[in-house]
Length: 362
Image (tube, rainbow, N blue to C red; front, side):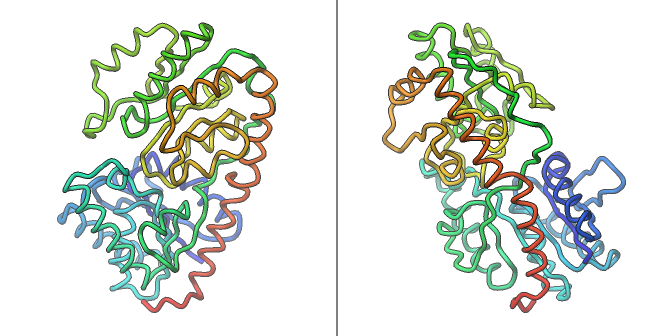
C-alpha cells in the first residue's frame, strides 16, 4: 500500500504526522508526505491556506495533489485538518481509485460556545455542511465523539488524538513536592484560557505563596482572540510567573511542573498539550469541553459550565505530595492505555486498511 499523508503546516507534519508515517513504514507501507512550504526535499509541496478557503490556493492545491497522486501511484490518502480535508475530498472526483480518509483534529474557533458572531455562524454552517456531504463519499475520522455529534456525521469513526510516543519515561519525572507548580502551554488565546490561568494563579498565590506558574507559548498576531504584546509584558512582571515563550523541546518543562492548567474553550480534537502532560504524570485541570473531558479520570479537576475560580482554588489548595503522586500514576496509566502512540497508531493503520475495502464508491 502506498499512502500519502497531507497536512496544512510543516511543523505539525514533523511533530505529529511523520512519526505516524514511520510507524506505517515499519508495517510495510510506502509513505509519502505533503504540506505547504515544506523545509525538506522528501516532503512534497501542496499550496494551501492554513486559515481560509482561498479560491486561488484551493485550485492550485487541488491540481498539485492530483499530480502527486498520479506520479506516486497513491493507494490511500490520510489528511488532517479542514483545508487538507477539503482538497482530499475534491480530489476524489478526479482520481476515483484512491481511497481517502479525512481526520477532523477539532472544530476550531468558530465552534466555541460563546462565539456567536455572524461570520462564525456562517463558518459553522459551511463546515458542518461540508463534512455531512463528504461523509457520503469518504471516511470521516474525528478525534473525539462530540465533534461527530455536533456535525451530524453518523457514519464517522473516532480515534482519540494523534498519538504521542512513549520514548521518554515519565516515571522519574516530577519531583514529589507539596508546592503547586502550575503550567500553561499553548498559544496565548483568550479562548484557550490564558487569562483564566493567570487569574487562578494570582488568587492561588495569596493563600499559597510558594506556588508558581510557567507559561510556554506565544501570541498569535493574526488571531483576534490573542492577547497583546502589552499584556505579555504585564504578565512577565507578575511575581512567580515564569514566561518561556516558544519552547521547541518541552520535555524538561513538563518534568519540572506538576499541574497542567488548561482552561480552554477552544474546540480541539484531543489537545496534544494535555496528552503530553499525561505522559509526564501531571495533574490535569481543564474544562469539561469535547476533547478535554476525555483526559480527566481521577487525575485532576474538570471545570464545568458552572464552575467558579474558587472551586479550582479549593481543589489546588487540597493537593499535597501524596495526592500529586496518586494523580501522577493515574495520568500515566490513562496516557499509556488510551492516548499513547502504541494505542493510537495501530488504529490509523486499521482505518487505512479498511478504506481499501470500504463501501464508499468514489
